[in-house]
Length: 256
Image (cartoon, one colour):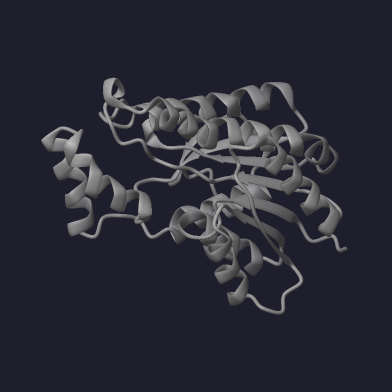
């Protein structure tokens, strides 16, 4: 055990989560990476073979026992917890609300909203003692109604307000929500493939144009912001819903 910061990152097998975990490891942190895919986690771990500062775990954040175990395993391995990054998320079902499968809709909320609740609840006793931080990765969809994304929009609105509630109830923990921008991830691929069936032609064209004109953000850009928030966010930001390019946010890419 060392005094190096300990950070738990969900949805870390690819995209923003994996990029944030890399930034944290570069900073010298001890990092637990979590994803449902054992293969994805194993692939990430292979990149960093030999380091004792990485704990790869598989688990489903929609399940409370998994969330409790992820926190417990992290503390057992590293002796403490300094930050939780709730990044795991899913978009589907991509369907208008009247046509959406109720089970898929419910599972979306379980991953995107209930999962962060489970993890925060399990992490709070540890984060209180370290005056730690929680970073909830939200979305512009939290404040915009986008056709076909009903579950995702509602869940992200919920996690953004969950951030405010945590800030009000846990003054010793700095909790922030981040809008990461429109990022070049598997979620964008899904939007371009399935979105045209449910989104307006204008919205469909918008997302396709972003890809065609190379206007999607590299995951490393919001990841640097997330890593900085997890390590250095001041208490004055607690409860806020911040854009990734907010000038109050530093950047671990620049700092490393």
